[in-house]
Image 1 (cartoon, rainbow, N blue to C red):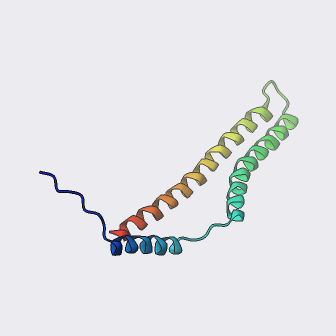
Image 2 (image 1 turned 90 degrees about the vertical axis):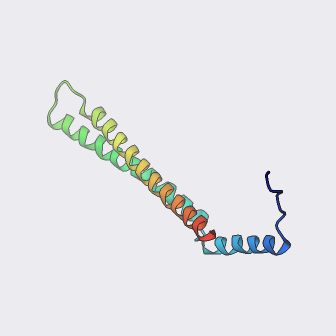
Image 3 (image 1 turned 90 degrees about the horizontal axis):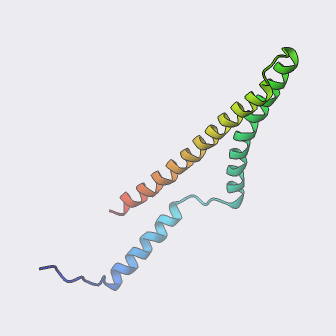
Length: 109
């Protein structure tokens, strides 16, 4: 037969709240500016390779005129590389957040 659920005591509830407060104090405080900085990092990680690809393609088109449009091809290649780079940064940040959460959970046990 299943055991009846026991209500946690008042002392247990207070202890849980205290543990949550202590965990929250250990976490680094991230300001709004840190968030904007991260968005800037992501933005530039896409923009920079795209602009470099477009500039390189334009130079190739001017130096070696031909049938192919290198500007468009290298712009798309730079954009693809930039998106992969941004994905890498976001995934790295996601892993760090998940690791912190797992450490907090393991500290609770």
